[in-house]
Length: 104
Image (tube, rainbow, N blue to C red; front, side):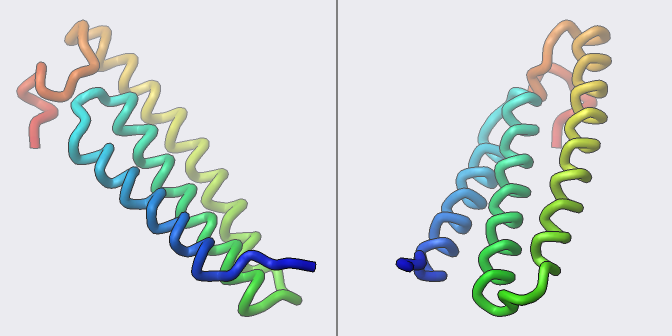
């Protein structure tokens, strides 16, 4: 059985994390920013599963953390979409730069 080396998995995870970070800091659309946060959470999930497989193959700690993060990410996405909908109803835009309240 041919296994993928840990370094390859970590490279993909790191690339996903920095793509998400780039999207979070450069985009003005709130939906795109939410997708960037989800991408960063998924890269962390890949790390948990990879380290669990290579360091502790007989245990499921990394898998349990991953399931927990997926559950939290689903709840976070639901709350964030509700906030975005309310923001759109009051400002008629989901662009962060359009309102003075959402500027950094």
